[in-house]
Each structure stands twice: as structure tokens, then as C-alpha cells.
Image 1 (cartoon, rainbow, N blue to C red):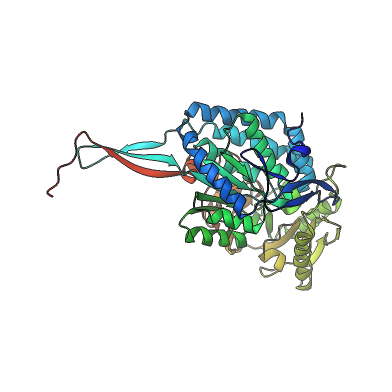
Image 2 (cartoon, rainbow, N blue to C red):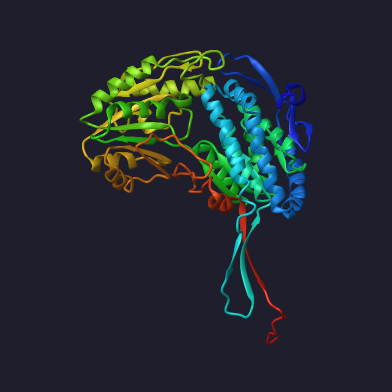
Length: 486
């Protein structure tokens, strides 16, 4: 029986069972064809309030549940992702425009996130600390209560499950608001997996919605932590709203990541890495290589070979043919990409490849002769665009790579790894990959950026997840009541 039976979730949201959404319905469309592939319920502020009330009530019993039981639910969820990988992966392809290998990556990562989260309940969650008084003094970590998760369209499953799984494992309840454009693979699939895994009712609520739904989630007094992944502009608003309500917000935001190609790098491998970093999932990844900084001795050949590779990459419907790039998520995003490309050419950049589209299919694009002020170089494009800028020495490379408001991911390609490490220390970045491109993530690794790329909060790994989804409590115990002077 399919995990995602459209007759089950048609026009509905998941909240303590399948219930009618108050905000109406939204059509789910395949961006490659525009065809309707389903409908989902749209949650409004009343739905958020009802979900948070149920979540807060259910969370207390869940936090008191044996760590072995919580771990077992997460392990079963991991196995179910593997069991239903083909079905969910197909939804990722159709709904988000991913190529099948990227759909497979999302389901395998979802399984791994659940398996890793299953190790969290048995982690040591406190320490004995010294006290000047005759008492036992402890610092312990407790669940925050209800965690709100707001996730985007580009890697809809990964960017939701990496918060949902550890938050649940550590004894919290979760209210998840996925992007309406990918509400099935990025939301309803998660609800169904955990339902099948035996998660008690009331602990996970999936509420597809837009900006108003997210605002209600951030403002809800029962939601104590917000985990947000999205644009820097939206993240600033989420952070401001969370601060007004005195709650923590973990913000994983945009990027304009640099790939630095030093003069001793293997050119063929560098071009391959650069193409993958810029064109994977049509460049719609926060870690996408947005700036190619290439030593002047290699720059001309790099542009020529990267452009040739871009010209030969097939673009089309990933659900029907074998392609390297699928569609842009919607017309608004496509038009933003094209405006940045055309304004860059108008400003003097040379179009070495691409720069055209048919429908939502945008050709992989290479821009040469750019400057630090070229629009497609200076701004996050979130599309398949590779601007190439030459540098003369390491000092210039460090200055150029660091001259960005973003600081998410950095790639440095060189045969001299110690030289690359020394260069990396001069460039602010939450993630650094030496001899690899900028797009990489693992469930066991801390993930996050600095500057406009986020608050420095991290997802991934036991220490980061415990820090993100628990609170610290100081607790003392002594045998007798202290006697005071009055």
C-alpha cells in the first residue's frame, strides 16, 4: 500500500490524525510540466494554535518515556525511509524538480538522520559541577517542549527531517511548516513515516502554509524554539519576531559560497567540481558554488572548459528522461535568475555559456570577465549560474573570498593541502572543504554559517543537536534545609 495515498491527504493537514485545514487548500504542481499532482490543506493561525496546544499536552508524557522507547521509534522511522525510498524519492523528483539521484540522496539522508537521532536519547545529558556549599550540584539538559520547524522547497525532506528527528528524539514535540510547493515530500511524508513508526499522537503536526502560518508559529507562546531554514531576508524577520517573544531561533540562511582554485590545482578535476557545485539541483541549494575564484594562470582555460561542460549538460523533466538539471521551482525564481544574468551582461560580464531558458528550464550558465560588483557575482543567485573571477595571489584570493556578507561554505582546490588550510583560516566560513566543491552535508557533522548565512547555530551531530533542542537547568540537592539568619 502506498505511503502517500492521495485519497488520504487530499485537502487535509496532519495534526493528531488527518483533520480538515482551516485555511483552504493549495494545488501541488510538478514544476517540470505544470500539471496538478495533488492538493494539500493550508493551515492558518487557528490550526497553529490547536496544534501547539495538542503538542504541548502530548510532550510531557513523551519526555518521560524511556529513552529506549524513543530511540526505537527513531530507528523504525529510519527503516521506513529505506522501505519507502522509491515512492518518496519519486515525489521529491516530481514535486521539487530534482533529478532522481538527488531524490535518492534525500531519502537516504532522511534515514540516516533518524538513525543518528536514535542515538541521542541515550546520550549523557548533564554533568556534576562543584559547589561551595555541602550539596549535590548538577547541570542537566531538558527538552525545550515544543519546537517549531520552518523548512524550504529546495531540499524539502533533508531540511525538515534534520530538525524534526533530533527534536523528537530528545523528548520534544514538533510543529512543522513545510513550503507549500513541496508540502508532500517535505512534510506529509514525514508525518506518515512517524505515524507508521509508532510515534504517539499529538507529538508531530505538519501544517503546510505560507508567510502567515510561519508568523503564527513563531509567535505562538507554546513554541519555545524555532528552527528555520530559508533566505537571509526571511531569516532576519524570523529572528526579529522570535526575539520579541524571547525565544531562541536557529537560523540557517542563504549563501554565496566561493570555490577557490589555486594555481597548482588539477584543471580537469577543478572544472568538474565547479560544475557540480554550481549546477546541482539547478543551483537551488544554499551551499551552491556562487563564486568561482580562479588563479589567473588557469582562469581562461577554466572558463573555456566549464562553458563547454555547461553546454553539454542535458536539461529537462527528470521524471521522464535522464538529465543533469531539472526545472527551476517556479516562474518568480526563474525571472530573478535571468534578471541577475542579464544585468551582469549589461554591466560588462561575458556570457560564456547558457543565459537562456525554455519554460522553467534554465540552461547552466557561465559568466566570465566579472568584477566584484557584477550582480550575479555579488548577490546570491539561487540558480545554475557560475561567475568566474581571476585572482593573482593568495592575499587577493583571501580578500575576494572573504568580501561577502555570507559565510556558509567554502571550497579550496590545491595539491598543497597545508597551503589550502592556511588560506581557509583567513576566510570566515561555517564550512570548509579542501579539494572538494561547496555542496556537502552529513547527519553526523555540525552544519551552519556565519554572517548573513545564519546565527552560527548548528544542525547535525550529537553535541549540536542537544544544544539546539534542549535547555540547561541547574539543579541542587541537600539533605537538610539551610538555616538562614531571618
